[in-house]
Image (cartoon, rainbow, N blue to C red; front, side, top):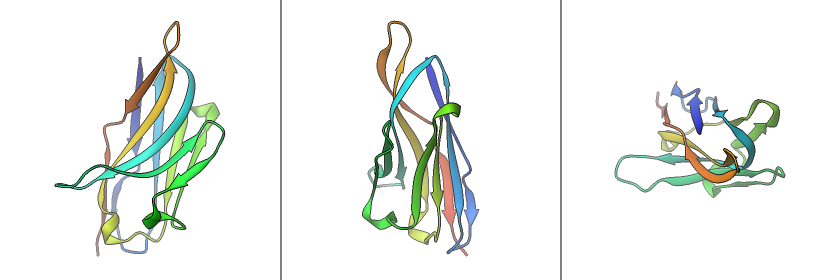
Length: 121
């Protein structure tokens, strides 16, 4: 049983920065990968960034050079550093992770509850 909790969202001015956190708790044997997604009303959920257990990262084109995904393995926590924010970045941001949990360990896909990021003047 695993839970992901996002935090760090809020209201920010265009050009500003936010740092989102994704904390995993529960019986965790390993986190194979973690990602951040975002969704606005009426649109599909969009992959923003991913990081593998080996540290390989990938980004959606519109956030390259502005966002950075990272993780603290010891804390079972992932982060999304968001710089140079634009109004079009406004969305609910969700954390997702592929986690091995329980005994025997099973591979699970877990989603957080989402945190709202609003970029507006």
